[in-house]
Every structure is written in structure tokens, then in C-alpha cells.
Length: 405
Image (cartoon, rainbow, N blue to C red; front, side, top):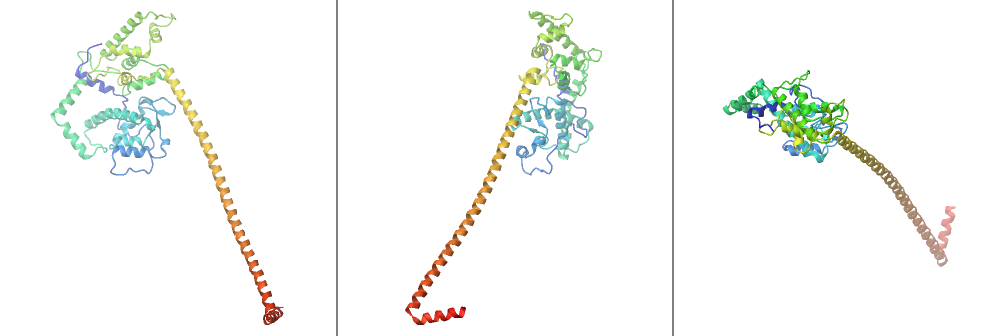
């Protein structure tokens, strides 16, 4: 491995930040995510409480979905040509306060990966903040998304000797000739190395750090635009050849194919990446020269899988999601059948209850009628007795009957 680079070179890689965009202050945002209409955050809550409120809102399913696994119609921080990064940059100038809360209003994700989403958001937000503040400082005009008090504090900080010294150091490092090698250059412009890798892999073939390195440091005619990059590339190619010579299984199966293609066929992407990292230089923060943020996942043991494995995992996940969708549909249909059955039973119970009520009324009427008949019968018996016992009562009743007729 080459010796660690100088402190000045530590700042060179800051120009290779992940997901650079041409203008962080343009009016539009790519893939503009739709926010919840009519929702206003209550006052007096911190960022965490506000985020919890947003994640609990219904209707988040209609927002663009984030997924680390490359599933169709999903987005992620290391895919989609920097769409999410440009969205984060837009949040800075539109809603500078409670940034992550406002991010939660734009995208949807599985609640289980909330911390992973937060970590990626914070990582990109920190880098975007450095770049955006640098642009604001150069313009010298307060943007509307920075409050007057904060702007005054920032301007005062930029005037102190320590800040001026640091700014001059960074500026000098970026214009440094690096011991005769010239100012650092690459040909990817504002496109990040991670985006270049994605564009190269759109053909379905995974690429190594070395291939991305060559792609971003050579002109159309194949010549290197940076002398230091050429030195590292030469060391990398030499090391690859040495490794192939040490491999007894290596050999050209097709004489028409170049040794480079044979190397690609016999070495895995991870093996080639290890070789490249041994041939390049590192700054004091441990960032390798010339590949931007590509090494982050690799260094953490999270280098993305080979295309076959990744595609297979994505297919398996999609199949699992289809099965879950089918199961949820069957459950929903079963629930609907139960609901209809419950409604029918409820209606039947109501009808039975009404019928029982009518039967009770009829029974009560029959009972009252029987009781009336019984009272009439008893009265008739009493009158018959009285007529026999008292002739005057008999005469009175007879005269009453004649009058009625």
C-alpha cells in the first residue's frame, strides 16, 4: 500500500462526495414527492415526536417507497442516480428546520428500517450541508431558508482567524499541484462515482472499483486526465497481472479474448476491489483516493452482492410479497364473508326479535280476552242467582231487556 496522503489531499476527496448534483439551489426537485395535504404539525413537539406523528398518519402508502433491496418501483440512497440526495438538498432550502421530519412527509418505508433510513439521511445531509453552506458563503447573500440570527452568527464565524485559516487551507489544497502531479481532476463532473457505477452496471455486468476509477479519470481517447490517477491505475493493472500469474487456474480459454477479460472471468469483484484498495492511497480519514463514496459499503462488509444473487434475492422477495399479497387478499375475502354472514345473522336476529315481540303482544291480547270472557261468565252466573233469589231484581232485569229490544 502507498503511504498515506498529505493532510491537503484529505480535502481533495471532499469534491468526490456521494451523489453530487449540478445545482443544489435549482427551483425544481427531481421525482418531487407528494406531501400530506392539510396536515400541520402541532407546536411544542420535538423532531422525534413530530416524526412519530407523521409515520402514524394514514395514507402513507401513496408516497414513493424506500427499499434497500432493489425491488421494482422503489428508491434507495445508493440507487436512482442521486434522486434522494437532490431531494435532501431541496429540503435544506425549503424547510431548514426539523429536516428529518420533513423528509418523513415525502417518502414511505417499512417501519423496521427507520433507523437505517435515518442513518443514510444524516450521512448525505451532512455532506450536502457542507456543500450548500460553501455555496452560500461564496455568494455572500442570505438565502430565505436561513434565519437572520443564524446568518449573522455564520458570518461572524467566517470572520474569525481560525475559520479563515481553515478556509485557506482547503482552498490551497484544492489548487495544490501535489508535488508536480498537478491539480486533481476527473471527468465525471457533478456525477458521483456511485452514480457512474450504477450507469456502468445498467448493462447487467457488475464492475469493480478499478473500472469505475478508469472511467472517471480518462478522456474519450483513453488518456488519463490526472497524473496521480495514472500512477494508481498502472499499479493496479500491474498487481492484477501478478495475481493472475500466481493463480494456477488462470488461463485464456478463448485465444481471441484479451487477458483483461480473462482476469474479469477469474477474479471476483470483491477480489479486484481488494487489489485496487491496496494500490490506491488513503487520506487521514481513511478514504481511498479516486472512488468517492464507493468504498463505504465495501469497508463495512456490506458490498452489494453479485448480480445473480442480488437479482435472485429481489425475485424471491417479490415472490414473497406476491404470496403475502395473495394471502392478504384471501384474508380480506374471508373477512368480507364473515362480515356478510354477521350482517345476515344480525338481520335474522332482528326479524326473530320482532316476531317474538309480536307473539308476546298476541299472547297478551288472548290472555286479556280470556280474562274478559271469564269475568262475563261470572257476571252472568251472579245475575242468574240474583233473579232466582229476589223477584224484584228479576222484574227489573226483564224490564231492562224489553227496553233495549
